[in-house]
Length: 271
Image (cartoon, rainbow, N blue to C red; front, side):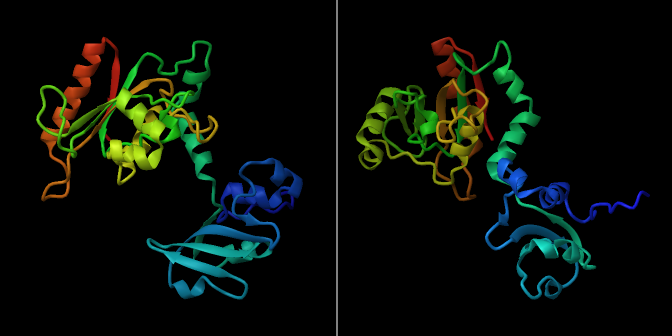
């Protein structure tokens, strides 16, 4: 040993790095200051602990216990190392921006070199189809630069009235109808096309697959961000609280038939 103090192994590396960094270094980083209130010199941290909750608090320390032996703890930066020495504290981690984690996910899945290489792939010319809980078709990530929709067809199996040819349930909306709804604005547009993604799951899935990143100025764009989109919203939940496999099969069948009719390749997500 050379006399230097090893970082506390109960404190995650990024939090140790943040505490060792200068204020200037923190300010330049997009992540080091996340969770830190510079005016109060307080940290919000994630704590994994064992034993009773009563041992988590203390003077100047606020804590919100969570399920599974976790807690969110707010405490002065000067107290973190001492706090980590408490017997019931297993690990302390700093929070991170969620968009940063999204970027890390794209990087880990090797999407960035695919998109940014010499022959970068963007999904242009390809169809991306989903069978899910629907989509928020007003979301800017599913619109072109001129404001028109990237969605070519939206089949909502839960709205009776005008099913696609060859099918018996729901209503099919074309790009022309979706563009008209977009031009009317959200209030009037949703009267024209009342299809909604109540859970948000379909919108999230489609964003990962094909969102163009308009809202985040390109930071959180999806994989095939220049693709055209086909959306199937599955029918209303039955007595067992989920749509049926028959509706899923019909949705996939519809997407494939549309792609064949248009003579274009398609990638289908059924998350």
